[in-house]
Length: 266
Length: 329
Image 1: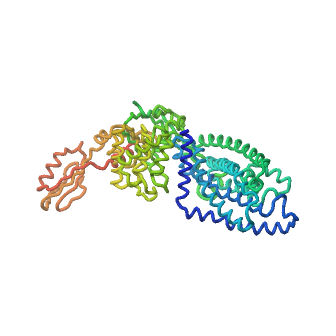
Image 2 (image 1 turned 135 degrees about the vertical axis):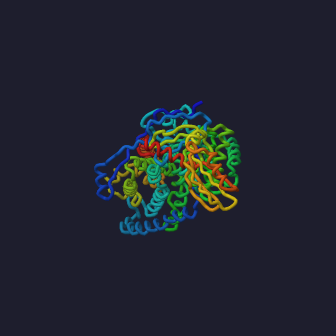
Image 3 (image 1 turned 30 degrees about the horizontal axis):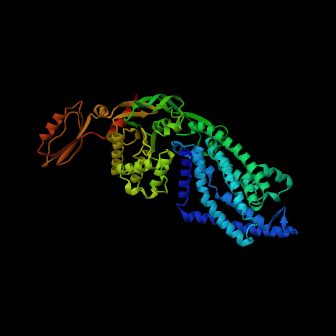
């Protein structure tokens, strides 16, 4: 019990710490407002050009699409730069000073990452939500947000696992910014950050939906606009599979990295 | 009881070498050139529990690397080490409950939050119960005189105030051993004194052993009973601080001030004159070559002395001398 409570405390202190500069926190979150406005302009034109009688493209209305993008952006903008932080810890040697306390390094990093995420994501959801509400009205299924919550949390675990692996690769390659850039672009395209995966050609959809990027963004956002039991089960089962696979891979990378630290540290 | 037992410890780092300029960068991309640096070479020493041991040496001597091995952060390339009965790099987490560490150059307190928040967090991390944490915080605030500092965000504290909080935080879980890596770096005289007093008190009252690395000979003089001097990863000197002084502090500095103007020739065999004025003189001599009383009687023959100071050269000079001797050997 005590060992869980220490990670809870680490999460809490990061949460409080993220409030140290409230102005910066709010200011950064306001960015979602122009994003959503631009998405609205873009998709409004697209939907009217498509001219479908039921106002839908592949099962999504303009309103669904906007609410989908709001949640996708919230998940993405809320997460802290885990890979960059961890690679800096490795490069400047401060990883050594995180390692001298009786806790698990990865759980420590995860607790701090979640602590940094919560307020950012909440503010993004509030500002993004208000903007979309003003542009297209309320979501068709407001309760979808609650149903999508476990998947949102799962998405952050996935983000963490992938980014922590990228961060830890700094043990070997020293600079990871190229990898974070590639990851980000892959997440944009295969995660459905700009275009919901439903709008892709079928063959590409089939591939994209199986990749971890879709579990990290598309899955929870789609669940929010279509909160059916069937979708919930399929999103969650795929996500859990990826979480198991990637946290396992992360544990291996970490063990390898720790041995490498004997070479790079000092 | 032995708290640290190190036998033939070795640590070799692989460092990438790269020629200057773009060409060098491109070449190193395809054909990286590595060279080995022996940071720690066959280091063996012991430290008893409750001992105050100074571990000093110039930059790059292997002090910090040794401390990192002893806390379990780095794996050695060879040799054995036991800290409080644990092999650090295998039992890192278990060992962490019993040792406290302070790295002078890196803060462990949360920078934007009051130190109290970090203290409470450490209580949780070290699995103390809330009542115990509170009691301990009360005790440490009194010992380190930080009562008024605990509610101020750490970034607003002066370096001296912050270091007192840092050391206090490292003692929260009643460690048996404190590893201090340059705790006094960048501090002013008063702040150094504060930290030294508090560390001394914790050593006397709680029997916590202290292994201290420092560039400041003052830390060594004020705190440590025994000293190990390392250079190039090897021990070049190991003895009690008092013996170090006796052996190496054979030079004395004498400064005399007279009641009236004097015009005597101060030249004495074996004495180096550093400064001569109308009212005084400053000399340096080696006590093994020139007797102290002959110098004093010569000086007092020159006139009425109103003030005399006899001092040792700074310990720093002594240490520099040891480094040099080791270099030349």
